[in-house]
Length: 400
Image (cartoon, rainbow, N blue to C red):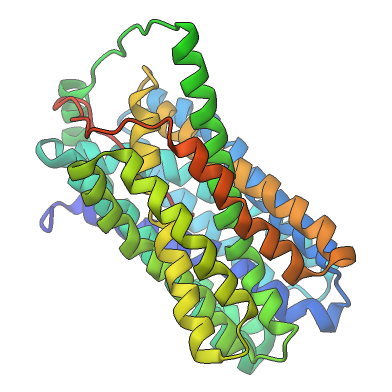
């Protein structure tokens, strides 16, 4: 994989896409006072951003399955789209200008994710699971790096500080265009590795288990999205500098990236139930410590623990979900990632609507406690590890 140009290009593109995706909460925290924004406005903007990126992913995934042989060029265009619109965000003189260009940016992310997921697995079919795992790890690193860089740049220069960060995204877009020369080989591998989905018996018990799993995914995604979106807002209200609360948001995402690798190993050895149930339960005291402690150092440690425990489950849940979908790679990736991001967006919107009246800290405490019913739902997950079919690549963690 280290010598595979397509894999390296899509991994680099994923890093860049999610780096830009993660700058939104920090940017809006910096602009809250200058533009007189409320938590409801910020929550609504972030929710619409995530919903646009989430709900369009299945469509883009279906289209990518129809465009074999041209998908890497489309991925390059997706990265360039994000770069362009985040440059416009950095140059926006007012909220009325910033909001529409901010909400158009996630279309690039929505186009890239299903293409990149399928391309990463197909680029190395003999190590498809490892390839997709590393692909999504690159995105998680971008999510972790983005808030820190955005906080540092915006803290010194304001919103315009994002301009060079967005401009650098044209580099991986160019690398994707260069890698597109090898896409004929990728298309041939796709034909060899693609397998039709198997028919599944939808018994009453199976429907109950699937519904429980869907609710579990939605609740866990909401917990992670609320932390990711509102940690900068919470600590900005306590007088922290942008560099510091941007660093905390980055720590949360970095811990989740590490957690995904470790949780995946736990699931392979002890089963999905153990990999999801216990981290959810442990995330409750860790989350309460992060939100309530007056110590900056303890807040960072507890924030890392929450990111590790809640964010780390994402990869195994996505793998399990993809096994349930008998459809093609791009469409399956779009459905799974789109649902996860959409439910996280809805949770973010609900938190923002309540935060202005109940207080942001109170809302985040309630969100933390949602891990308890989520842990109860995790009891429906399989107890023993399941081995994925060798010929069917599966997607691992998402980023975004």
